Length: 170
Image 1 (tube, rainbow, N blue to C red):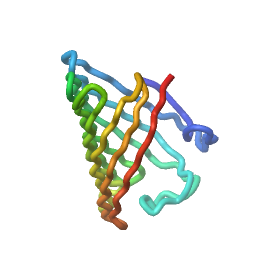
Image 2 (image 1 turned 120 degrees about the vertical axis):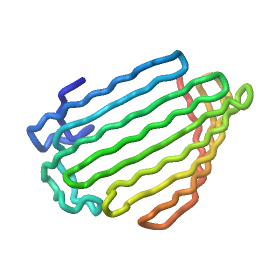
Image 3 (image 1 turned 30 degrees about the vertical axis):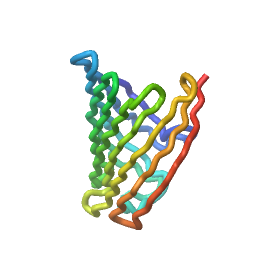
């Protein structure tokens, strides 16, 4: 639990309100964890948004959000999922994701993921992403990743994306 203030990283706080924030993790078994989090407080709009047009730039608004998630970790398979919901002013939003990582062989993983976000439930402002990818561990803590994403956009154009990334940790 924490009492916090601020707009985010490197942004001056624009109101005197404090937010109550909480996060908890429960491990009912060695391979399973369940998490929950919330934020209850007031934000201050950095800009006026098409998604929430009733809140103008520099206006304070009620910001309440929560999430529930879980992780299942076994030797060949990891599965992570989370549902989140919020209400900023009068606008309700929700989202969900599920991601699985299958360890196919010594240095090779297959990744599948689905995510859904509805930024304004009244406007039906939703987007869904379907992702398939691979990762190759070429050295401990170092990997090459490639993925394909299909984005199904309710308010805008659908698109396809191919991404690659090299990650090096030391």
